[in-house]
Length: 273
Image (cartoon, rainbow, N blue to C red):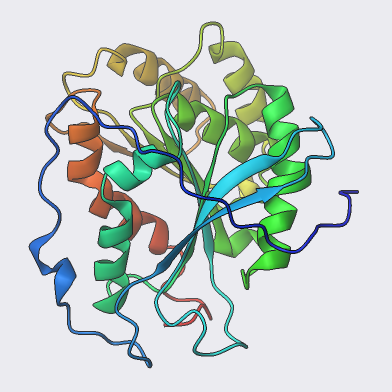
């Protein structure tokens, strides 16, 4: 059982990573979308949080995005999406991709329901899984008005973060109903583990799986090997191989598609609209 959690602690945002490639401009309509929400908010709130770790002894940090009108109805609860950054990066990677503005536009225009987004800082490995499950996930559910059930919880990542997301989604299929694998970059010798984890997931607990990789991505053959595992086990997934490579430019161009896909599992639920 996780230790009791303290009151929220807000810390300054770290200096964002500045990619060398040129990112596409943000959605032009994000500044003035027509809002379908019941309050005058026009943008979400981004917070930096820390929680003491009962596993590592060092504080675990994460960003959280609270959607527009989060404070309007104190009884409303929201689905939650956890997104992992790539290897050697930080949660700032998602801000550089345009996550905040894209979310604001999609929520205000009613294309997706209001959702809480969590961006953990993670380096991979079993110890990070333990910290995430014992400390970060309970902190999110206790500090924020999330819908605390599998059907309203999803996880995903880019590059190596996609492997971390897949590992958690398969090993704890009771917690996540969907997983997004964006330009999955698997670690060496991970294929056998993924096979065993996927095989152990009961058929009725298999999550929705979204897989995309640019056609010119050097990691495409490794991703296809993992899809062969899913095929062998007759596990369904949704696959996209559009033009593109393994870069922030590619992920930024497809960010809206990712968010709409994640939200597709919540549009017909009792999540606030």
